[in-house]
Length: 95
Length: 251
Length: 201
Image 1 (spheres, chains in turn green, red, yellow):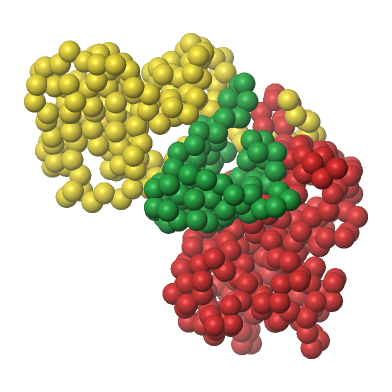
Image 2 (cartoon, each protein chain N blue to C red; image 1 turned 45 degrees about the vertical axis):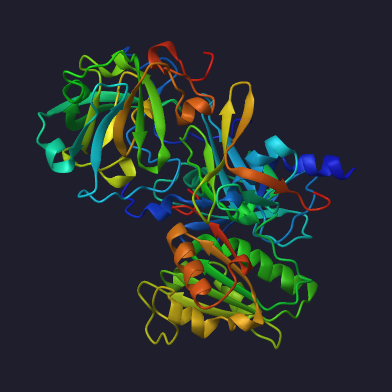
């Protein structure tokens, strides 16, 4: 695959809406989250998502500082979210 | 009640293909009947899951093209050279076939017709799909929001929804559609003919002081460059919503 | 499992019957690019490879020094935990035995560390005796950044997440310390022949 620019590999957190729904049972992409590493608050949908069809999991990084907010892995006994630097998540009223 | 509706969006449902419509030589719209479809908001997407006979699965996300309020759900998909899912959806798939989808999802990349700010839409290739959903919704509800769509495609034949956009662009409250072609231009072409750059955005976009709502969608490289340019032009990062399709635009 | 969609085949994948491929895998022709973060771009004049941790004296090589070490070109199969295997891949690099030569340590484990904060853990014996390399060429061309260049760890007998991209060194440790994917639910060792995909397998 002749990819030459690393920026090409990145998606937005919004693309993880379906998988995140397995953890939260609501669509959290519009929810604001705070990066515990740099302090920036932004919607999850705007964060940087590294996810590929053949990858072991999906990694979401702060779009400001690159720190790893959380990781989603599909394990045989269920989907698992490992929380990294995400310090809080605020869901809008009504989900 | 609200709880079950939400959960319904997050479980896999079976959609049935009721019609197929070719948009360009590599792009096709799939019209689906989805039982108990809860309705969606412009800009949202669905996850599509295909399973082969040996159990192999592939999942991809596709933006919803049809505006809210229609009975059937339309997805517009571009066939990519090495795309295992897109080559099935824009190739093998026939009327009557079924596949699993999950949604509508993606509350972040959504435009609300009640928003009074001018609306700037920037599309690269098949990135026009969720933005077209917004344009269609605006027309359907009779909104008067000043709207501009800057749409980059390789050639005129690659412009998806070209006829519909030409028709929509007539009228006093219609959206302004600004195509730019990056490949071979037709004889007599007087429109823009280069990749989207900061100068083009400065010409097409409203000044940052007017705080337009901005949605950018397409291949990752285009989206990143456009988002960066818009912020350089003074637009608040929080007003620039992006949807990257990845290196191959959604395979 | 999922509704089988008529006529969907998916990417080309072959089931291998020769016994060459571990259980549960299929053979692909392409080489998927995957990463957990942005591609690091360390300039070669700043690149170093370091052996550190529980050693009498840490050692470091610059890129020129590293490239001057004895190297070998070899062909091997690789197996990803997400079920794809790629056969007859050609690499060139330095055996980990060479970089650990005469090293004085009691440690039984290593943590491979990379640019971009990726880590993976392995028993020392899984990177010894000709089982592991630090490679800088794939298919007779310099290793591309997307595939882990300038250099990556290669440990073909374990699942491919152990072959850390953008590797910058090995830390020798007394106890097994889970790395990135291991902390996220994957197996500590990752032997594809025993299908050690997930923690607890």
